[in-house]
Image (cartoon, rainbow, N blue to C red; front, side, top):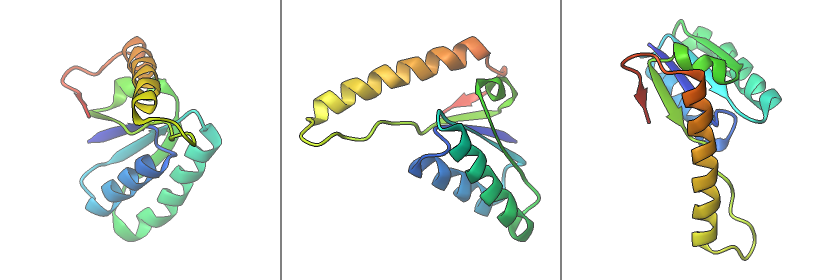
Length: 116
């Protein structure tokens, strides 16, 4: 199974990738993030550990990875600003989520893929 994590260089995304590594149930994990260098670094870190856990591939890339995935996990989110209300944060995250879904839709989906 191939999984793509959008927001893969963030705290939640990188921990999701690590959990998938430990579970050993997926063959490939692709990390997509606006912080491309951070996503590449996370993928390298996970690759170094994969020799001890399971035979898996970890890599970073852009939305071109989405059509290859059996499962797409969106973990991206914006941090709360000082003195920002929760409602304002949710509105900013809704805008981000819509942007991500638009880019993923534009890239195309694999038939039967699951979006989380």
